[in-house]
Every structure is written in structure tokens, then in C-alpha cells.
Length: 316
Image (cartoon, rainbow, N blue to C red; front, side):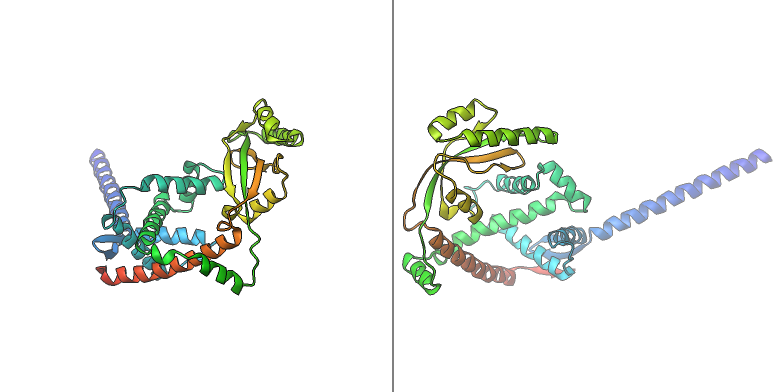
């Protein structure tokens, strides 16, 4: 009799345990199903609750903790789907969009002193898969190329208009320079102890003190721990104001102050400096860039509205 009661009890326990496990599985499946519920369909492409959740978390990070409204996130994702669909409408055979996306993500990671895997892990710790960022970048790349091609004529500003704008601003354009540079770097492997970085900084300062001209300095730099890269020419019109200011203060034949980057300690040897052409000055470049940005925004808003009007958008 006791054995029979024990068997009944054991059977009841198995039933309860199995039932509880089944309930947990059902609830988990329901939760996953709720997350993957389609909220909007854009020309056949779905946007799910999970897409909205990921994008909302990403935008909250980008806005320094300020969360966007749900509708703002949905609107951004609708525009993104429309932009991504343009790859089927326009010819992108001359572009390697996958490589451009990877380069863009790697550049973002590098600025944060990480590789892409580390950056992806950081995003994941905030509940954002790196695919969310890649999708956004891919849409931006496609969109930029489409706007440039479709509205190329309206994005141009002729010289007379540039000069007129400079006169309106009462801004004198002092002209610019073309700098002939040799990038030099003391490589510090990622994960090296601080003592190694400090040693390379001292090497950089020692080289900078000894470097008097490119003819003798470049060969000498190669005998040290430094990596000397190929010569490049940069126009002051293409440089950030901070770097332009550094180069203006650097004598020809000398090295710029060393800067610590994710790869090590690097600086530039200024081997030559000559006036740029009149058409390529910082003032004119600034006017052209501002005009381009303004026209790009106008054309972008106009075209996305046109595409939205044509799109088949269904809210579920």
C-alpha cells in the first residue's frame, strides 16, 4: 500500500513539473511572439515591436539618455525601409555598400578606441544589436548616393555665387595652402601597459627634437621604432580647423606635436607648404559646404515625402 502511494505521489510530481514547464514555454513563446508582432508594413517589409524596441534603445543612447517617442521611432524606421528599398530601384553596381558599412562601423569603433567586436559587445550591453546600427548606416549610404545622383545639378554652386556670398558676410578669404606631409607613427599594440605608451611618447618627443628637415629626418626616423608612411598632400580647405591651425604653426621641415591615438603615438612631418589655387581656399570651401548641406537637406526632405506618398504603408 505504501509503495502504491509513493508511486502516485511521484506521478503527481512529474505531472505538475511537466505542466509547469509547459506553461513557462508557452509564456516565453508568447513573449517572443509579442516582441515580433508586426506593427507596420512598408511596401511589404515588416517593422516589428522588436525593431522598434532596438531602435528606441539605440536612439536613447545617441541622445545621451533622452528616449524618443514611439511614433518618432516608427517614423524613422519607415523612412529607413523606404531608403533601403531604393537599392532595387537605382543602379549601385559601382558601389560596394557592404564594405562601406563595415568601414563606417570600424571608424566609429576606432574613435572609441575599440575594434568592431568590442564595440558590438558594448552596444549589446545596452540591449542594442550592432545590426541596428548597420541598418541605419546602410540606409544613409544608399540615400546619400541617390540624392547626389538625382539632384546633382541643384547641389552645385558657381564661383560668382560663392564670391557674392563671401561679400554678403563681409568675410575676407585669405586663401589657403597645400601641405606636403609624411605621417609618422610609433605603434603601440592594443592592450599594452601604460609604461609602453609612455615610452613611445618619449621616443616621439626625442625624434621631434632632433627632426630638422625631411631630407635627413625621414631616413633617421626609419632607424627608430617609428613607422613612416607614404607622402600625402592635403589642402587647408579640406582640413579640420584644429589641424589647419597646428600645421600653420609648424615650420616646414619640422614635426607636428605628437598625438595619442588608438594605434599609438603619431604626428606629421611638414615637408612643404605652398599656396593653394584661388578656387580651393578655406573660405570658399566653407561656403560651398554650407550650400551643399542646405540643398541636400531640402532635396532630401522633398524626395522622402514623395516616396512616402507613393509607398504602401499599413499599420497593423
